[in-house]
Image 1: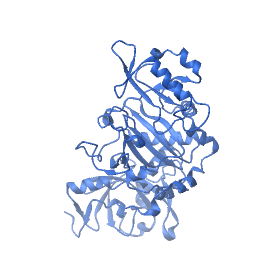
Image 2: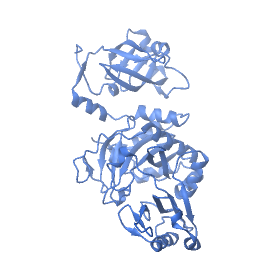
Image 3: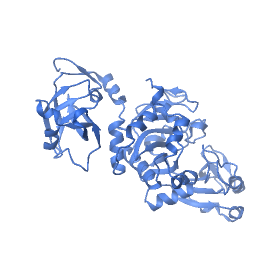
Image 4: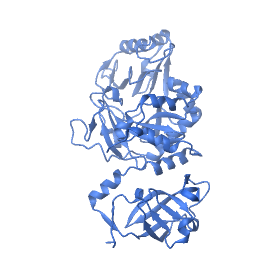
Length: 428
């Protein structure tokens, strides 16, 4: 897959978007503690904080046995996974702790590590350094089997309350069980519509098709609770007042998606993992009026669906349709209705006649995805539509147009919804 240079977001161009964030929002990117307070205020799930070290005196007084395992020790203002220790269990004699790499930590070792954090050894910014002890989020079983001794996380880039790109970062032996690309974790792009992984990149920014030293492919992994992951990311961005940012999340089997931290300067390697340019996606959502997090997710899943799933369908066998296929459309009453359709490869996004959309209850001002300029007709509503073609169900976004009212056709299929089909004169 080739990506045009004009579609890529570089470091200088990124600054154009980070400048859109308010000064108040930027503070959350520099303080994990401030972020956690905000998330709790808005009932957005995040890991529980067990203790905050603010001075050397705290180190001398703490009782490490009070913290329930597993737990994490980390700097409050760190980055790139520096200074993070994941403690999994106690030693047999109960006097020390074992980290995710199997190393033993005594009480004195932990005190020294916290002292180093307080001295600023692992901090990226600020002068008032703090250390945090917090709950360790155990990985969701669906993802745990791919990770080396750590918890995979999800990075979601949000702009204008729309999640525009995402990847999962999988801990490896090289990254010492941490979900950080700089340390050697791998990044997998994710299809925004389905939550299925698409492409992979190593910590060295090299394209990969399989997990390290494995026959397991990096594509085709379904991220659990996908729509909820995107929704929580947008909720966090809105709560903090971010226009442009990256949200990092863990997925807990029972608690669902949980915010790890918010980043006002998200890394750009996510583009490599997705083999797609952020700049193009940012341009597509700029200026769209987004009502809330759910609406933002709907827009993302309509705009940024990969054709990856369609490639899988092609491998299963091409389906042939005529230039005037019969299309089944799902109405608001949960019933399916047959409609006359036609193929228009000159159109990217499919269209539905205003009469049919009204008849099926698909046009509701509260449920519009956005409005799109359509030639002389002006800005037309775009709605979410579920349709079936040759027995295959599709969820897509269609333009509602009056122009089809004057024809015998009620649905016009564009290129976006024709992936995985061959067009012939006779359906078979």
